[in-house]
Amino acid sequence: MKLRMISALLLLLGWLSACSSVNVTEKANVDYSQYRTFAWADTEVKTDNTQGPALRSQLQDGVLRPAIESELAKRGITPATSGRPDLYLTYHLYLEQAERTVANPPNPAVPVSYPYLVRYRGALIPVNYTYWYQAPSGYRTENYQEGMLVLDFIDAKSNNMIWRGSVSDAINNPARAGERFAESARDILDKFPVKERK
Image 1 (tube, rainbow, N blue to C red):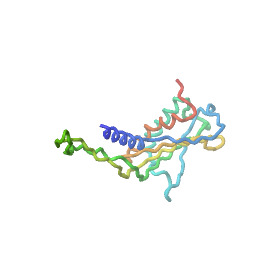
Image 2 (spheres, rainbow, N blue to C red; image 1 turned 90 degrees about the vertical axis):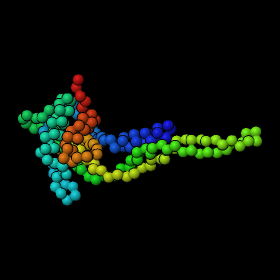
Image 3 (cartoon, rainbow, N blue to C red; image 1 turned 180 degrees about the horizontal axis):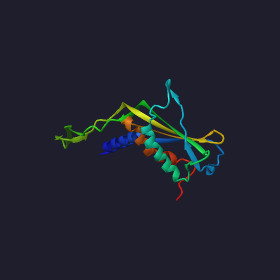
């Protein structure tokens, strides 16, 4: 029973280590309450001698942008309809090969008989003792595809980046990375200094 609990704990830890985590960088002394409008900006990001983020496409935009816009609307920040916006908003989506260490599935418990003798009042008594042995599961290294979504907020007056949020997660199907990260937009924007308005 104890070995099963340890195995379950190791599997849980492996699962938690594979979960996404949000990282945030923000400029100090910024009054975020002044921002009410934004506009999407296209950026040219160079990675590995190629131009543009790895997974930029109109299909990704069509999934990611509405998800982000919905989260921003809850905070009172909406797309600019005329004039200069308060913020420029852009995202970068990357995909790369990564490695992680995970626990192997628990090995099945096997009954082991271990006969031995005890002496009682001068007589040898054979004892049949059976216990369940479960070999340690151990760990293995596996390769997987890790995607990263980076969301940048730029002050339109100063052209200074004021906030960046990013999230990394395992991606099973690169063609559906936009859908996967659209779900993560809420996780990123939960860390944004302007909270949802009730």
